[in-house]
Amino acid sequence: QVQLQESGPGLVKPSQTLSLTCTVSGGSISSDNYSWSWIRQPAGKGLEWIGRIHISGSTTYNPSLKSRLIISVDTSKNQFSLKLSSVTATDTAVYYCASEAIVVVPPAMDYYSYMDVWGKGTTVTVSS
Amino acid sequence: SYELTQPPSVSVSPGQTARITCSGDALSKQYAYWYQQKPGQAPVVIIYKDSDRPSGIPERFSGSSSGTTVTLTISGVQAEDEADYYCQSADRSGTYVIFGGGTKLTVL
Image (cartoon, rainbow over all chains, first blue to last red):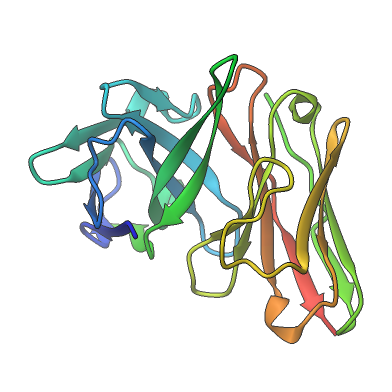
């Protein structure tokens, strides 16, 4: 069973860059059957999808965050990372990483995907 | 922008049936997924592809779809089912992940 663990600073100053890493264990980040996503949740609020990366190198970002966001993968460490620049207090949230299972549906080879395993989450506060 | 709409709260007595709806235009084209989140914990998928249940999820959880609305049904609600429930789908192109606003289920 795949497990994910987020890590990174719990406090970031405004205008700086928030950097988080997700370590994948029990499975390979190089699997073609998964993408790797980041999701966040401000205290007392709902879930917001941030973006994903696939081992092919393809990335998809939430349009509302795209200009500030970079998601990358390090296959040698079985990790993927998030960098969010120019942060403000509104970026304060619990940040989750998740594996996004990709299921291909024959015969049309269409597909669907969903977050099947989540990390426990890490709290990031943006404050001076 | 694409949105998924859920009721903010649903209340039910133990043993009764709870139904949580999620509506959005793209649901007529994209599958829906449901996640359960208990306080201080990460979400857990309980329904995928509108109505399929991952292994280990109790049979009292079921999902259905009709047009632009999907429904999570919890039959014989138990106290441990008290949690926040989120629907999730994708935009019409299937590119972007969208979450509903979440529904707080209270077991009276």
